[in-house]
Length: 506
Ligand SMILES: Cc1cc2nc3c(=O)[nH]c(=O)nc-3n(C[C@H](O)[C@H](O)[C@H](O)COP(=O)(O)OP(=O)(O)OC[C@H]3O[C@@H](n4cnc5c(N)ncnc54)[C@H](O)[C@@H]3O)c2cc1C
Image 1 (cartoon, rainbow, N blue to C red):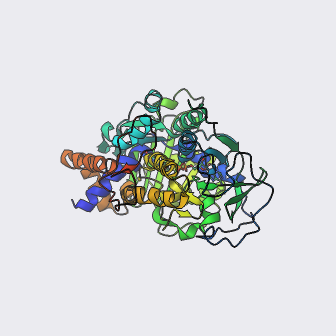
Image 2: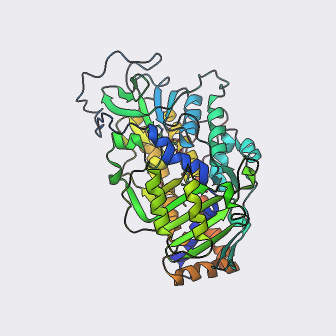
Image 3: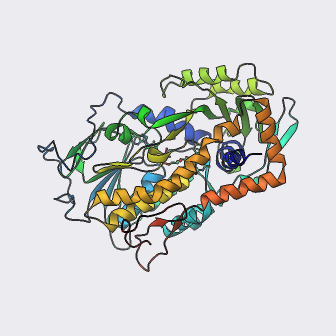
């Protein structure tokens, strides 16, 4: 087997497959696009922030009369006590809010959903850097207590239900696995916990969205769908793959998000599905895979019988409204027409689904993660949909970004540059891992399906896959924590920092 294929398989196994197939993915994902984005103002007045606008302010008139209490009077001069608007309250947003408060900033988090999103798909943390950041946040134990307890085995089967290959449980759980919704809730509450030094907690604005961002001489003026407009010192987009901040401040999504040739769909099975998901199994035909499974941690939920998770190849991007549930269902049903096993029964359950996660497997590439006083974090900056260790990268990114801002409170431009310089090589590697996820989950030829199954059945290949997943997750390390000083920096094997650009780290 080629090194490339082993590499792709490793990442598919470690992230996309294991968490998609073995643990189910549905409600949190379903909330993600089809419901949450209904609150987004699509015809908002959009004023695109221009790169470097603050260096040559062409809106010297600014936007008067809206400076919130506590905002620094002069950009870049007064250091701490800065106001930061964060868009998105999932993983990256609350994590950044937590750290910024600890560094003396005053973050406001706006979330388009009316409340923290619920839902059941599992995400994991892998390697020392992920765990170290959680530990430094004081969350390692709590996340462990609320974890799923690890993965479970899953079988690939043929049309008659006979087992062809097994995905062993050690592939599925990472070092620490938790439902994304539990993680988000823990991060949110933790960010609201008062700091020992008395810094105020972040402000959360639910059920709202940004409608425009306008650079002013010393800040960014933000308008919202509901909340009165304000000017903030800094704005951070932590609002996911389809980021609104990115669209408002950097440009259209099509400039930054590439379709990788596959679609993913996930939904909760209705009670009428009976025993369909009694055992975690996956059925593949060229270009399409359908799986079912149950997440033990969700077993007490009323009416819960399991979830469906499907991946199919589609070279063409489907052109439909991301909020159009009936169109999504039709597209999925079309993709599985004529499929064997119990796939028709599975696809039939779509009819009862009132929530559905459906999106292309895509990758985000933003040439520069900041423009003026606005920067991107998490999936908005470096997302990969599946297989890119997005949760751990979001947590590390929040930690590094906050630390860099604190390291030069008078110079956000330098802080943004260091944040990107330190993180980009690592997250790019993680994204590369995600590149093979679709092909692993839904190989487009029978030969490739057979090769995947053979790889899963071969102990040596499995060991190599696990090792590659481990190597990737440890491709970043963190500095030792100076006593009493939370401002830490990411360094690591993947990051060659130019001398003089990153004080205190080398
Ligand atoms: C099927 C699937 C399985 C995955 N499995 C794993 C895994 O096993 N391991 C792993 O590490 N990662 C996994 N990931 C990736 C992981 O979910 C993301 O990388 C991670 O959640 C990124 O966090 P984020 O906070 O940057 O973005 P998101 O979690 O996408 O959150 C974005 C937030 O912004 C909000 N928002 C959107 N638009 C607006 C707006 N206009 N205004 C305000 N708020 C807005 C959204 O409602 C949401 O709350 C998986 C992803 C998918 C889709």
